[in-house]
Length: 394
Image (cartoon, rainbow, N blue to C red):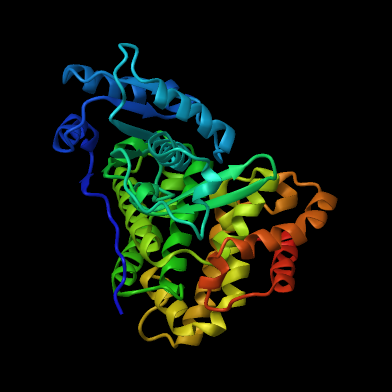
């Protein structure tokens, strides 16, 4: 059986990789990029640095900085207008540079596809696919988390019905990725924790996915070996460059893994929490990961045991049963140390939570991701898992 593997055409990886941006544009034969980012990247000076690099290479550009966390269709269409409006001198944009965390990169993917091919983002919602590549997209992540720089996915919220839409296809795969861990040194502890657990979840879910394959297995296991020993370190020691570098590489490898194997039940249940209650995506994954793992492990004990061994919390001498017990224990301990809140501690009203459960469960199933899980749940089982998470995230 063959597997369709998509990757960026060019990857620049390591400290100082951002300086290679003009050379990447030249290699792709583009010279009029729109920079898609957010206000925080402007405040941190990253966008100015990119513009200075491009100006030195005589590359004109403009900036769209109005992306939002957990991007919505409304915010995407504003970016599409900026893209189709072109440069101030009347020339059209021939490429997109996305700089920031997962939200600006996901936004840039959608903006590029819609500006080039037209339509609405719902036209590309799974199971439909963006089957053609659009304008070249250069993704520059500043967090070690989403892996969006290496995936064929984007997640956009339909803000009229509070539904996160999974959009898939070659059109959403970045053409190039610049993975410079130095850009993550300024990320605060809360975001470091949330994005780090997001990356770990990507790796675990890719490895236990029903769509796992030889390529994704190697990327997922390598990602776990990098992320697990370093996540606590970057949370407590944000200036630890070696740990930041390991996390950034691990996040990209996890992105490659789940781009070819897909994610599973954690992500399927996580998206509605974000859409309804605006919980950051990585945090909602963290809330769910221990409970979903307990629910799933009997259907793939050897796979979960291998996760535990790759994370360094079990050894080859441990039985699979012992290893999965250690995995569950570690996921709970990680949430406690990284101060992951329960939904109630986050501030969600309990009555709103209970009333939303049936709709959230239906949306989770409709996304398709739960169908990749080792144990495929029914609606009632998803509701029960949501109820467990309300009580505890460990």
